[in-house]
Image (cartoon, rainbow, N blue to C red; front, side, top):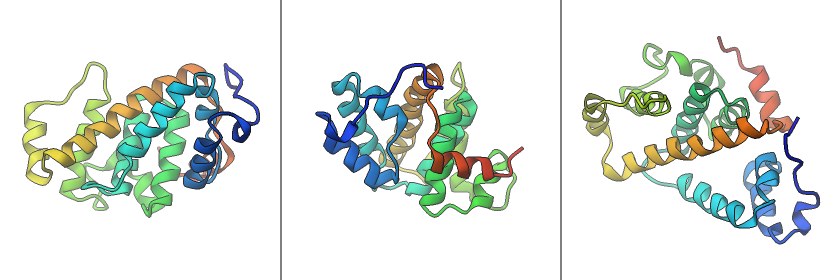
Length: 186
């Protein structure tokens, strides 16, 4: 149960266009945004950040969602774990690959390039941060500075979201919740 009630009538609020776009983009109204709307400037700033982080770039959108998923799993945020698993699948990542994300280091479903990014996601989401210079040497074999900024942006955005949603106990919506429950993960 949410610890703060979401706003009612979001499409009729001053952020109505943000919610219309979010629903179009995600397929549902995000409960974390409905709660965040109590502070409209934070909501609009966050929506802009998310739009920029997920914008088309050098890192494909499926890998961005997997980075967010791994970061969320490390942080223990069920809401963000459900959203990122669902989002990865919506972006074309096969269910089996999502289910094997914890085994990315040994699974044949992941490339060395993906493993380098996922290592940064895993270690960069730990407290204290566990990323090493050696991790960056490996990462730079596959990604230029622009792509690395995209990777770290996803991790950082989920640092905020994981704490937001876990603290507020944000209720998972039906679509991401059902997909997340269907995963065969250990």
